[in-house]
Length: 58
Image (tube, helix red, strand yellow):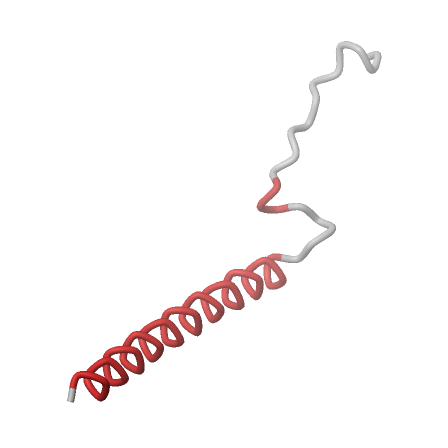
């Protein structure tokens, strides 16, 4: 078979041999940690603002 008529092998980005799946999993875990940290910081900031506003109203 020539190269033009040979069936092309599709590359699956999930199973790319250059990057092992564990590295992809770590990226997701780090992204999740960043999201959780951001949400916690936001909630603490909102609590601090509410507390500060209550102190000013007294």
